[in-house]
Image (cartoon, rainbow, N blue to C red; front, top):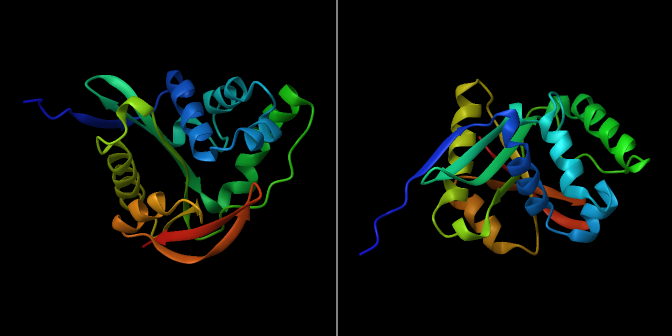
Length: 188
């Protein structure tokens, strides 16, 4: 009989930038969109963004999941009211690395703490890592005094929406992001 594997959630460190970059890439999920956003070396670019402070994918806004001491996934998010400021740092890196800045719709808004990206490494899927990351993220944000967590999920990904719904998220609207129709979900 196999023993249950232990999932631990901890605050990210700058040395976790690769794990955060991988989670962002998994969350975007569309290789064409990733290349349009960050260029052909998108994981390197996302890692550089995650290593910095005050960017959308900064390690300082992330949590890391470990299973049996091995990094299994990451989650990153930020105060929606700070999107424009955080994009400045993100876009500065994109401009330096790719020579351009993408035109992207706002995926969040004032009044919500935005769960930007969550990703679980393939070998750790099905162990409850994603659920643990989302739960820990929401608990942390509510403990910090925020009253609403928001996210977007592809309308063509009912499995992900089912997970979020089981954790208390509800549809509040739709958005188009990276050319995909998305549900805007929130939890209060």
